[in-house]
Length: 391
Ligand code: ADP
Ligand code: MG
Image 1 (cartoon, helix red, strand yellow):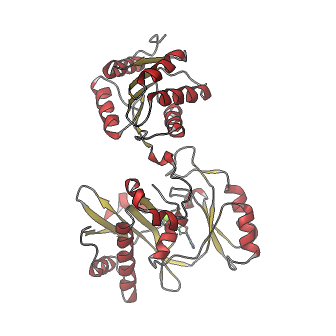
Image 2 (image 1 turned 135 degrees about the horizontal axis):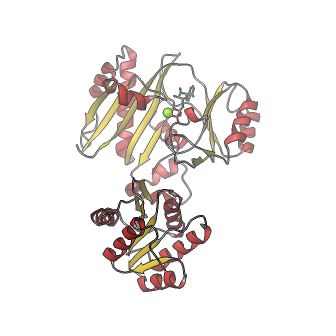
Image 3 (image 1 turned 60 degrees about the vertical axis):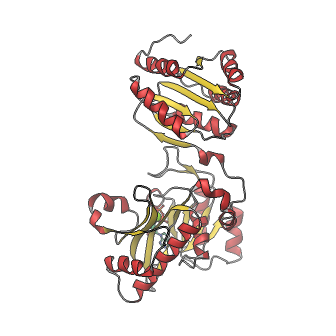
């Protein structure tokens, strides 16, 4: 589960990490209140759209402003609209809040991240002097500018490791220890809060000669959410966890859209598609306990993919019921009238007969079967022979 920047920064405050005091506002009223009460100070400010994706600066979602009037016009422009960055989908992400922070004078921007290296079963900490908005270019063109240290998760980090990394970055004097303290804190934060990634880009040295974490990306291991109630409180995530976070969708190069429940079944389904001569358009695991909203959204993701020429639904109803899946497919298709795509549904497990009957009775162009191989053969045939008769 991705946190918003303002949530990540709240957690960072708890660890005494150097973040600026910001104000997060969800409405124009909130902003006017901040301005009138003068809680945001005198500016200049940096105003930042809160979306769970980076690349905002390059897309106009982060802006330096010198007047409260410009804060309001930025908010009027973005609140309720969608921000598209190179890290979002083509439709972008809805901006529901804006973070207002004091603008600082940046002398140098560093990149710092800590994440889990699953191949090595270690924690890996990466840092570079080439931080800021072009880190991807640095990674591709000058990987030697990226320095790494490996941290054993069962031992944790030693301050000397932070100092080694600081020296590799060419830091000197008091900054070596300041940097090392940051590394020690973010490692503790990662371990104590079941995070899989913390990325601070930029970690900036400002004109007062201190480090500040100006941006923060954090991913929480969603399987550990149940034991992270403190994290949910700190981040003020008081609404129920958005089930949409549990959809795993990865677009691929093929033309058979797949909706499957369970990552293992999804991978096996893709293998069989390949072995029968087809190419999957996506990996999609709707998760074990998917609800209605989740299934409809998942199906819509497939429908929206222009490359998809046939859809294969492969559901093994364990927790989820097949009749719910059928109902969701019917609902999604009723809203989608632009093109007719052949659909093959294999429903097995909980309420499979009920689900199959719903699809058959819907009179939609759907082949319903309980046989996986047959289902996949039909979807491969559908894309190979575009004029195949599905009626
Ligand atoms: P993104 O990574 O999504 O583009 P950032 O939060 O990193 O968004 O902001 C983009 C750039 O804006 C940063 O690289 C930094 O140069 C600048 N910036 C961000 N916050 C501040 C701030 N409080 N003061 C001055 N500059 C800032
Ligand atoms: Mg950034």
